[in-house]
Length: 335
Ligand code: TRP
Ligand code: SF4
Image: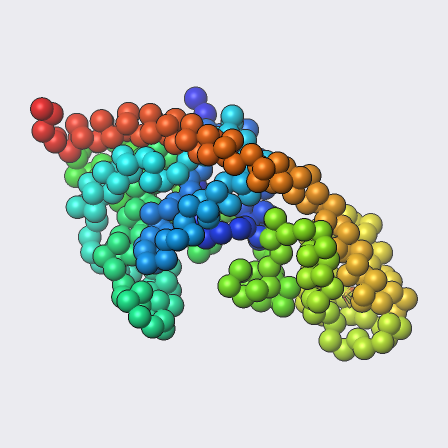
């Protein structure tokens, strides 16, 4: 039997290169080796965006199209929508009963989210009961499939730690060994920064989307910051002080290309414009196939919807097996 993996993303819209390099490439590898469940966490999106739901459906589709484009394969992995597996909501209730309040209160990622919310105006600056339950709901996601591993970014590790604590507590209280203590699986790839040198994120307008056209990609890269001490083409360059472009080369180029860029930049025989144009071509060629696949799905939305539906049914079947065991363990009325 293959070990189980569960992971998810909130449907926040079109994904960018950070998601592709940091998450999706990894998922595509994992789907061959593990029994994978990948969730579009639409309930998690509601914890902060409950009053901005007009784009929710479109965002679910965008995220799934990006997954499919990057090679997540619905025949290997189960791609599903969180809210189409209501068993997770039921499990969330059981878990919420056994989770001490101070476990969620000390969750560092939640504290950050709350801090950001508090700086906003209006009704949405309230920290809702649902948001407090964010890590418990995430635990329910993971435990709905009794997963062994959870691939996540470092900001989500605290949540997986809470999941381990909750799973252990459930086992203690109900005198069982039913739930695994899932382990976070950190991705060890280099983090790609945004085009301005800060963390890549859509709210910073410094990202390259998987779905951007080649022209858009080139335009964005041409505007990226470079070695600031370099004004003229034949000024000697300092690749290591080139905060974005050279870093991108190190991610997208092969060894020879990187050495060549380093050499020509340091000797002042290649201008930054030329260097960026070459980088854009490199990035575009890496993404070409992915973007073609995405175009296909954009033109076949019915297929995307069917994949979400089928995957969610498959996920629900597994979830029902787990939940019937949980009800037994909690000693709920059988009827
Ligand atoms: N909270 C995660 C994030 O924002 C998304 C998520 C929801 C998730 N459910 C999950 C990740 C279960 C791993 C496992 O990135
Ligand atoms: Fe950066 Fe390339 Fe310009 Fe060198 S030539 S400073 S690596 S953009």
